[in-house]
Image (tube, rainbow, N blue to C red; front, side):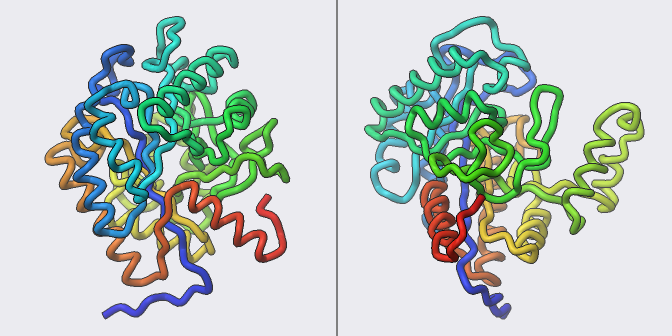
Length: 340
């Protein structure tokens, strides 16, 4: 029997779920009357989470909050106290509607401030009406955060954001240089730390199978762009285990890779682990890179494997995202130095 690793404080563990419509991600973005049948799986998923002591955070988008059947599935869970309801802004299916949404416009940070403001206000009011809860935590659709979005969140009364995706970059946005651990973001440049204490940033857990994450990310990123992309180095490096980008996400990484990532960041002194996923991955589709057959069993078994392994070796405390933010802030205050 494996003995637990002694730590002075529990390692916090957060599971967040983008709770949203389902569609083939390679097709056009759905607007009105989006399919949210995956929400039928949430009560069973929540039961499994409770059996593991997990306290999920469901980032609910407008399509879900506007659907009577989805509300019926989530509402009882929201008021039982074993999960948190946050807000998730998908520009394409969140009124008011403006121009057609393509890949560029699907990222919240690429929209004009006025459009984001109107959509965010509509989303918050819809969640309040549907669930009798004012959300305090938020994640942008398709990741990313900037000055205008962060300040709109503060104006709306949000106190936790989780839109930062460490070590991620594409042609539409990036999170390069962002801290990989929770921090108080600069309201003028949310990828940097500051001393403000109005809204807290709690990134998801991402890393590499090499100890120097920053160097590994530079190498990995260089081979995603010309002139090196043609070499397909990242694919070869992943399959040969020379260099793997690992995500604490059961859609993108195997249980063994997730466990390896967790142990690596714990050894680095990370006080928190943040697993993330999409509710649409609970139903069979082509969007999950790993489990597209009997997806519910695949995803939940992967989560069970990770949680059971970590719980057997470490002192783990399971939290919603807002609970984790408060605990991190309290720890910093107790130590006499603010997390910046």
